[in-house]
Amino acid sequence: MTAERLSKERLRLWLRMLRVTRQVESTLRERLRTEHDTTLPRFDVMAALYADRDGLKMNELSRRLRVSNGNVTGIIDRLVEDGCVERIAIEGDRRATRVCLTDAGRASFSKMASEHERWINALFEGVAEEDAHHIGELLHRLPTPLSDVT
Amino acid sequence: MTAERLSKERLRLWLRMLRVTRQVESTLRERLRTEHDTTLPRFDVMAALYADRDGLKMNELSRRLRVSNGNVTGIIDRLVEDGCVERIAIEGDRRATRVCLTDAGRASFSKMASEHERWINALFEGVAEEDAHHIGELLHRLPTPLSDVT
DNA sequence: ATTAAAATTTTTAAGCTTAAAGTATTTTTT
DNA sequence: AAAAAATACTTTAAGCTTAAAAATTTTAAT
Image (cartoon, rainbow over all chains, first blue to last red):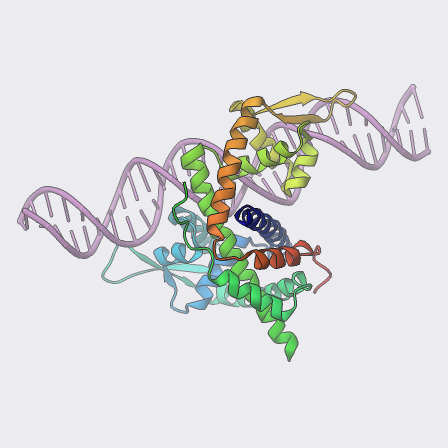
């Protein structure tokens, strides 16, 4: 019964991924809170907007981050209050809005991002370059949206 | 500058882990909701209690799950309402409570757990046993709580 | 042109999550 | 024994998250 062992091994892998991910996220949350007075969700949104200088539609943003529409609405609301983001009307479609980092938001994110990379580098200190690359490639093809399994 | 490349590779690894973890969690949430009318946090709590037949103190539970005390309080409240869990007084210490699966909770979890393993097995279909094992071992030693990094 | 359908976003209700403050109890110090 | 400190848990306030419903606007069908 190799299928049985394989299944158990995959379950163990999942549980460990979950543990590591939570630990790292928890560390990032704390650092972002104490050193930059912000949150991980806000950081994630800003990262997505930083990559596209012209900003993104709310739609695209929520698809890219894999979170719900309503969720993004709330986070953007707060980022606008903070002066990091602005909503810009889209000509020709009054349903949609484009969302864009302000200059202040861009500067603020730029500072956080380089620290963020240092934090990650330290947290993954035990992972050699080949392993990082290998695992990264493996995860890249995973997971396919759940195939039928009853 | 190998250190630079290593840092980037680790960052990429982290982003991919995050993506996969979110995708899997999202699938699990949906399955648990539609097929068992429950949530992932409740499932996690029940899993911890299932492993210890005598139950756990609130304290131990929150440490094991790496979430805050107050968080566990709320989830247990709801599990008690659902009849899946009961709070039991501890003799000799009126501050603490032991929390335990009821028979109904135990039966309910048992059913969910076997499906859960099938779902994970399907989601990680692309991962061979050796890879699962190898990555699992690597993650097992990760991460050490953030070492000093300014 | 009207109507129906689809698309885009926001709102709502319920639950999850944390940090910080609060309550009660036990243990340690003086 | 009284005071102080530590422990165990709950409550609170703020924010995150989702699914579902609602509001608005655009596109497609008749």
